[in-house]
Length: 148
Image (cartoon, one colour):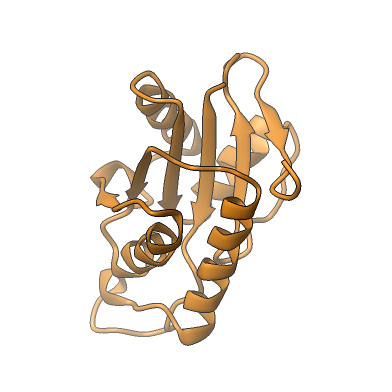
């Protein structure tokens, strides 16, 4: 199976000197940790964890990575400027190299990408994740995050 985990960064402070410097709130860290524990309990173990270089996404990825036992790496492609289709294409490139990839990024492209894969738009709350079986990229399957 080829597993894609899309995660939206956790809740961030509303203001900072620049948008890229907005840090997670304590609630944002807690939600990211809870989501990572849910993924872990469900048996998902990403071999690659890539995140946006923006602070809030790096902090979300670090929180999740600490729980999932993986060190995140920043990827400029996840900074929010890619279209949702571009995000999916980037994910598929990563899945050519390994079987389970986790990407931590931003809205609206996380929500729209998940909606394209699910064939139904679903808003992505901050700090949450969606998991897909991408073995057949023409027919992705939305997977549960509980009792896998």
